[in-house]
Length: 66
Image (tube, rainbow, N blue to C red; front, side, top):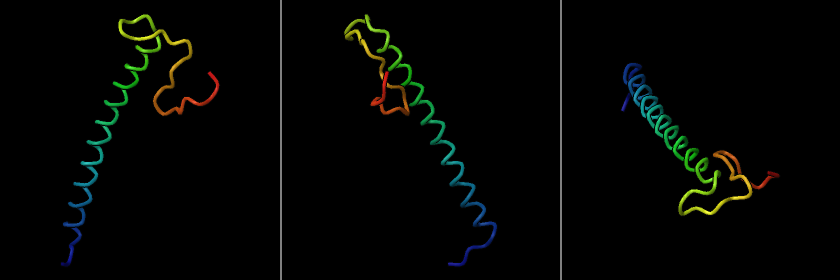
């Protein structure tokens, strides 16, 4: 199968659109996770233990000093 330049451009554009859509979805998931951690950090919420140490944020391992 021989690809022409317009076909190649269409394939690349389709792949970029798909990647951009996945990136925005990951951003939403990250915001949701940040909100969940923020709520757990406060302690005193119903059904959660009061945390004495700060929970790690997204993108952090949580293994360093607090």
